Length: 372
Image 1 (cartoon, rainbow, N blue to C red):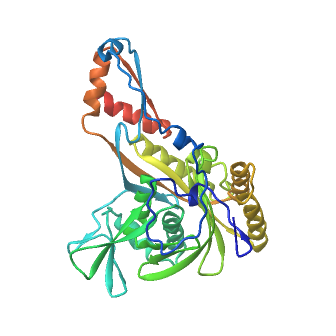
Image 2: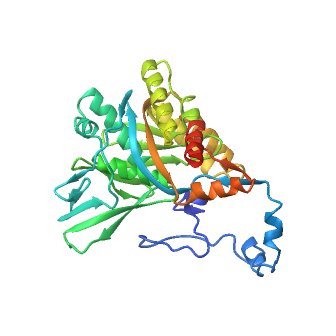
């Protein structure tokens, strides 16, 4: 659609499906699409046919059970556990509680803002995150800016019984992203505001605005996502996070080769503990690179045919020659009763297969827990 002479693309990120509720929006301009009696929603709205079967008879014929891992065997409640930044492993996490206050807090509008969820922090890493003027500190800052910015999380302010204190609830589709944003907040990089055009991050008491110039969402082909930010220092940077198999192919291996090898070792350790892992990288764009990307991005995002493939190509062209910032380890615990249920199935002679997109070491560790 065209607004004030500018073509705006319609896609999954700005389409509201039937039954959805729009929040935190004062006004909206839109069009109705996919409406009418010939849509799939209406054609399938005739009610499901009644089916009956003798369950016990069919159960006796089952030889294999295929199960998803995340959210089926596990709780789907992600908890940030550790990070590898600049080739250093930070796994000495402790409760981020001081004087009974949960995690990091910031002042804003005469009120105290705190993250809704508590995250354990590594004291050494927390101290290093405050020294942004040193080489190591800047590397850590870029890592946590990436965690706070490279996502689709929306911060929601929640009132508490104390009128002087509000909580920030990070809402989004991905529990992994929620865990990473809460971790960034615990280390002093608190996402305060997100619109389609900018984000505001409170960095150890100093609020900084970043212009969101573009966002390439995660897809199963690239196995990564990226955001292009106009930073307060007038630079333009692309921040990328994704699976290690995908990220190591787009990282500039001529830089910090030893750091890469150490990070790979840390990733192996994390996944061997059953943790979900992600790798984070970034690159500063030159003015000519940004202009070329912006032109290609606008053409691809408004294309009527093959838009997804075009956007994927634009993303792949900009997500390269990255500097590695680090990696994260997130825990997703098994649901209560899962090992017993698996054992009952195995006793009945049923073989259980687990399907997962996590690293092989993570899957092996899960299988070890299930069989122990």
